[in-house]
Amino acid sequence: MRPAFIRHAALASPVLALAFVTIPSPAAGADPVTPVAVITDDPYADVTPPDYKLSYALKEAEQRAQADPAAYGQPYVSSGVVVIPVTTEDVRAEAERPLTLPPQLTPPDDGTDDLSSAPPPQEKETVPVEEEPPATARAADRSGLTAEQKVAEAAVSQPAVANPWLVHPKVKLVKYGLGRLEAVKDEIVALTPDVLPGVEAVTGSLVQVEQDRVIVEATQASDDLRLALAARYGSDAVVVRVVTDPAPAGEDARWNDTSVGGFYGGARISTSVGGCTNAFPWRYSGYHAMITAGHCTSLNGSVSTPSESMGTVVKDTWNNSKGTVLIDGQSTYRGDLSLIRLSGSKKSTARIYVGNKTSGSSRAVGGMWSRRPAYGDQYCTGGTSTGELCGWKVNALKINVRYGSGNYARNMTRGYKKGQCNLGGDSGGPVYTVNSAGKVIAKGVHSGSGGGGSDHWGGALDPCSEYFTDVYEAYYGFPGVIATS
Image (cartoon, rainbow, N blue to C red; front, side):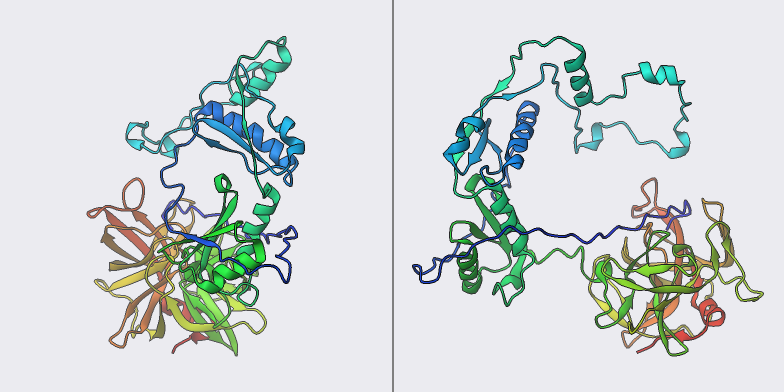
């Protein structure tokens, strides 16, 4: 985390309840099942987005479809025409009604991905603070309305006028409605191998509306998978697209650690304060625990990974409105630390994740450094925003640093390097080296960082600073010891 000390809000992880539509399988005793087809090309690789008029019309068509998903398919644009699929002739007349556009509709400023022509960004402190206008001025000021709000207002305040903008859709009769295809798409990724053989290779699913089917992306199109899909949904309802990339790593390893096999250090954690990284497994009085940065947590607060709850904070050296504080009557400021006691029978394992920010690679923890930090010590940091960064060199000991929040971190160690800097979300992560046996030797717990230019990512020659709490502060300040393997 940078000296600006921006705390990232915890990532909400609501449980998604899927309401599946009943999907009948082909009747027993029917003709032999034909395996679903296989494709390799991306059908959307070179698609051009529709212009603003067709986009508005498409939205209107989608509203019709969503009102009756069994009778309608998902509308789409093809060759400059809005196509509305229907599953029955009963709704053809309704579907063929022209789509009406507002007379005042103008091209929106949706921006571009070419930032070379965009105005430069501003630092927060350079943006002038606007005074709140009087209530009468607010009532009269319409400049803040969106284009759609202005259109709606004009429709009420002005007499009706003939609209020259009408979009005439093309209606296409199809087999499967919007509700059915969405249900198939959602169900496939929730099935287990005993229900859908070969599903282990599936990496995603999406509706291909133009072909009235679901594309199942998979790393391999086994005969078992193709037959199982055809038997469950019909040979024409699904197609398998073979992809070369494995399942996305965004929710694996560091970012989705679980208690299965024990929690590791270097993984993403969430608390009432925000999202951070944990550092090292810990043991005390027979309990399994983890340590992280104190500013990442609150005393007695709960801690979780994006996958499941971990436990409760039982000790910390940090006051969230002040910074480092004395704990348990001790006379030494012990940096920025927190001790998390795991709940129930949950365990931590003496390993930490290493590698990139979503890596599943890990190393065993061999112990702590044989001494406290010294000038010139080199080390690595590990975090869920930047992954493993090495090449740091200690250039300050027992330093008190004032973060942008006004809080002081006391009795810290500072290091520096050039290039990539740590980012928000790395806070609480492990600081370490690796010995000749390939095991991690703990050096500390990452707290904050700075540098790297205006974007904090850091060019090859940009200097970065990094602050960590010596692991010996946890050793002397908390009950217990680091877990080793």
